[in-house]
Amino acid sequence: MKGFIITGAASGLGWATVQELAKRFDGQAVHFGLVDFDREGLAKNAAVLRQDGFEVSEFVADLSSEAEVAELVAGLQEAFPSVDLLVNNAGITHRSVSTQTSNAVIRRVMAVDYHAPVELAQGLHAALAAAGGTVINISSMAGWMPVLGRAGYCAAKSALHQYFETFREEVREDGIKVLMVYPSFVRTNIEANALSGDGGRAKHKQSTLGKVQTPQWMANRIISAWLAGKERLFPTDKTLLGAWLYRLWPKLFMKQMVRNFQVELDVARANREALGSEASKG
Image 1 (cartoon, one colour):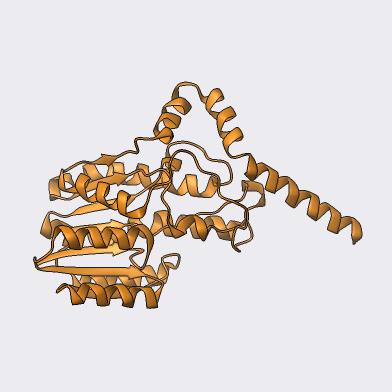
Image 2 (cartoon, helix red, strand yellow):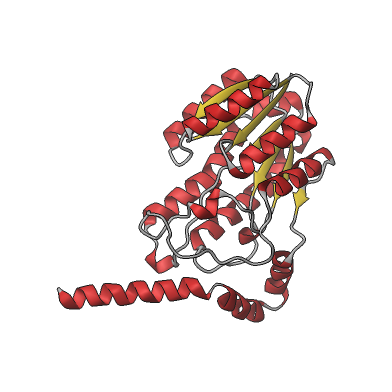
């Protein structure tokens, strides 16, 4: 029986990836491990898979908590003696300039987007080796180039990139493979639920670059790349051109980025003015 573990499986790209796997492996013996903090969404999706004849285990966990990630790893180790696929999809972001972003927000983003994938891959190393499995990490083009209002997110995705590019070579002899996925903008809840600098919900409109793709479109590309044995999957829109521009002509890239993401600076300016106004009243 194949073992597939997907984080952030209650909605968005995570659920789309699960659905794509279910379609590709229809009629085969597959044990899905669905991980998310959304208990109701997880239960609903698990019921759909069971109706289609798949075995499913549900794991409710807050991936920003080191203790809950450790408990999750222990549960996955018990349920999955071998893991054919670990998809580190769960992620969070923020939309706030660095000087107006609390340390707590930066730590939370780093915990979910970097530490949790690392701890899951490390904890499931033996199970991945037993199956000659693959770790798929959903990174971002923000890990390759700076994006205004997302310094913490960029840092987390850069760390994810560097860690797993190294990890891949260190576990190659164990038969474990790594696919790094670098999407541009995908229509999921990660941006809709983006944190503000104080840890609340970012209220201003999201700035994007290039076409915003559907989760289903992205999931199809990811699973196709995995089955083809690819190690990296890049976008084919303007964001890839932006990454090259940043490396070859960084000053020009920065000017373009400020133009495309000006709203982040406008919001930061408005916040400073509001604070100044409150201070003067006091």
